[in-house]
Image (cartoon, rainbow, N blue to C red; front, top):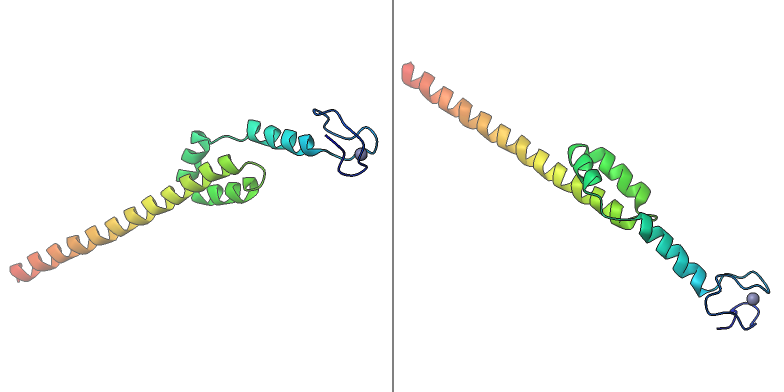
Length: 111
Ligand SMILES: [Zn+2]
């Protein structure tokens, strides 16, 4: 291949041009591989973010660019955590309403 900057012929595996120091296409590929090696979906973080959705949101924003897969795990965990917590809150509210309704009915029957 040839250097994009100075046009000199380069080794196909060269990461930077030895003539001008300009990074080649391999440089970007290697960088991506380095990122993906560290980046992996993490069940541990997903569980952590499930219980602490705020932490999940922060980690998602921090890792969004550098570790997209891990960020996605955190985002998913946080999202499921929020959904479950909202559903639980709704359930408690509904159950307390039913409970109050039953209590109201039994008191009116007694009166
Ligand atoms: Zn060059």
